[in-house]
Image 1 (cartoon, helix red, strand yellow):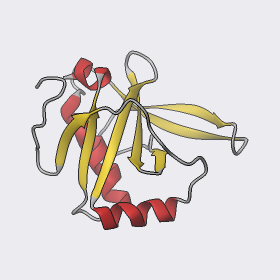
Image 2 (tube, rainbow, N blue to C red):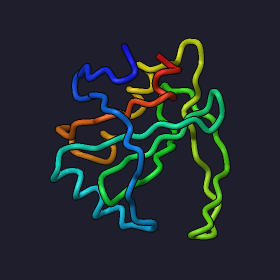
Image 3 (tube, rainbow, N blue to C red):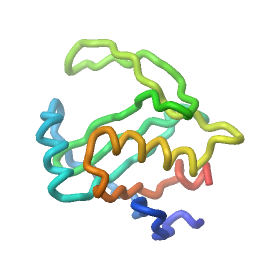
Length: 136
């Protein structure tokens, strides 16, 4: 797979990463979920927190939410994340890159999270970027 491959596997496809994201801080999650179920498409941004720890965000303009959750069967790293908007500290579970946990497991991780939040007919578009390229 190349960086900007548009291959589709089941309901997952890849698209080039946009240069700029537009989103509303503190947006309503219920509105976000309803919008995605109506549009039947969610965009996913994956970025490095460290060399082997990834953060996952779901995006549907103008909404964007980080979804670093624990998923059964996937190795994650638990960390504390402080929000300056809400002044709260929450536990998050970042995807952990391992020799036996690469892109196929990341796709499973993203699909499991999307299955929890959205209807199963929602297409998942993962933005191709250097992070994705490095774990293929």
